[in-house]
Length: 364
Ligand code: TTP
Ligand code: MG
Image (cartoon, rainbow, N blue to C red; front, side, top):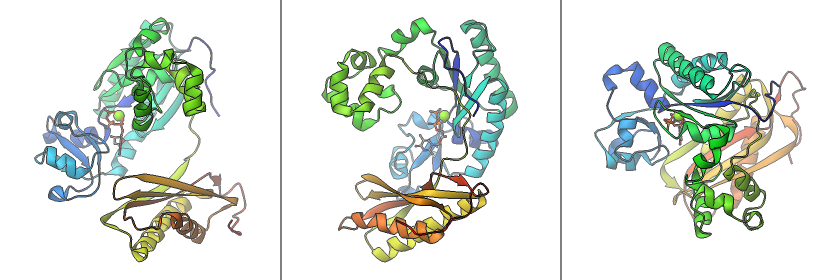
């Protein structure tokens, strides 16, 4: 694995594309420029049951955001341009963008379809030099792909990531080592990666609203309340992160999920959906020539509460029946009176099929 040294004087970029899916759509259909564009599932005149994947900054002005039910987005602004997700297209564009970004890095790590870390410590002299390099990155991405991105520059990945989100779209935020604390302190604690809504609410209950509150909190208190996550949060609040920029290994998991047209508790429908999800996951697995060891089930109830369960096998497998059986077995604890809104099936913990014999054996 190609890993950057976690030395003290690093200069890291976090690059994140602006409104990625919607920006690609607008670039391909310039007549959409300046319009509120929402990419997600079919709104079906307000009765659609899926979610918003992302939307253009113009649509964000109406309060629309990623992850919101598409029906809510429609209520907020029915006249927006609603487009379906064209994942093949975004993946293709993503691949080309990552090729551009990689050219600028000593060490490179793609973290999602539209974001990457670049360790540039060895190719720049200081933060001014790094700023010039970041402007070159933005220029190249725009020239070659017609898309804008935002970049955060900082001494570590954590602060670079928070910085890239600080001024969006088309932003560039530089946080030098001696500015880290002043940059982080006034931000809401929820800006720290890993602090979701639930944790943020718990923190608020403890009187912790901002990063400086978190940094000032007694670490024992955080440890008691959140375990190791508490310790990690406390470190991050102080801007400490020694994580290295590393090349991403192969794909970590393969999954698929389905939102029902109508919430259901019907075992016949549920089993049918689990089978077809398992089937599609298995097809991707075969295409990628991978063996799996872990099967994951995701369920979402009608009230949007969401749970995941996973089970690992003793040996690697390629067997479709094992995915189906395990998903159904994991499903058993949820088969109660409540109705389901969404089901998902995934596999992970991979091994290359050519490295090991295809082992199709007993399942736990
Ligand atoms: P993000 O980088 O979080 O969002 P974005 O690029 O659309 O907008 P921003 O300018 O704020 O960075 O996610 C990248 C893509 O991932 C996004 O274009 C669509 C997809 N996505 C989802 O499908 N669902 C989600 O809930 C989120 C957050 C993103
Ligand atoms: Mg983005």
